[in-house]
Image (cartoon, rainbow, N blue to C red; front, side, top):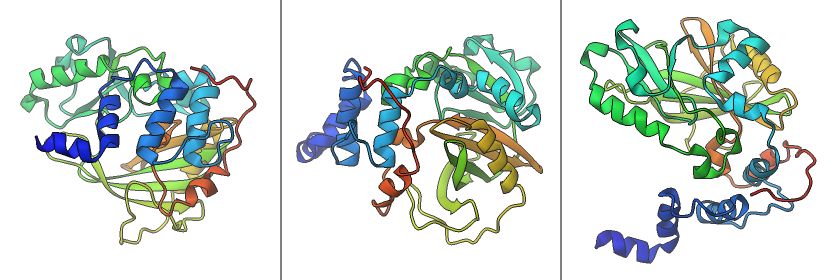
Length: 308
């Protein structure tokens, strides 16, 4: 009854819950994005003349459908691409790629490893001791990944045609992690997101607690998004310039690309490549920076016909 009352008071939240459960998955892409954008952002989505960063993210989903993007979003295939462009030393070592959980030969794996699907973002199982794993629970989670149609969630086109597989990667480091996500606009780095993560002991995914955002001169910017900046001061790491250089090579001629990094044991690793941070549904605080950052994206020419 309490849930019913909550939804009556907030019908938008109820409608969004139905969308997230897949009830509107058959809607055309443009209509689906307009509906979800209105419910989350509280504003009308302008696809004819997008101005803000989040509006342009939705426009790019519909109109910029370069087949290369599917390869870059694929956590398995992208390893070869990154190796070719910037070198194999920046790729997280691969221990195996499998069609399903049942195919994994755990006897051949080291005691610590990481399991991910190739076709989603954010899904991960971190194993710190395979002797204490709940294999039935892992099987349920991993095979659940393979049923996900990640494209349908937010119409992020690069994920639509990825071959759904499970990869096992080498375990990197231990304890709390700091990862870096560099925002590039047409091959030029502009912002560095520094996420401070807590690494739970139960092997679940490390979750960010704070995020500092810098320009490329390591000056804190006057905005944030989902996570507020920490009060702790961080000096510019020596390796940031190398991260910027690599990100600019990988994002060359792409309207927007985020390149994610880990720095572990004095080495730089590229975690993944992302086209739509937060699915283009993450508010800026203050709101005016949605447009300021959006001005950095130059949309490619298209045939004016909205896809989907």
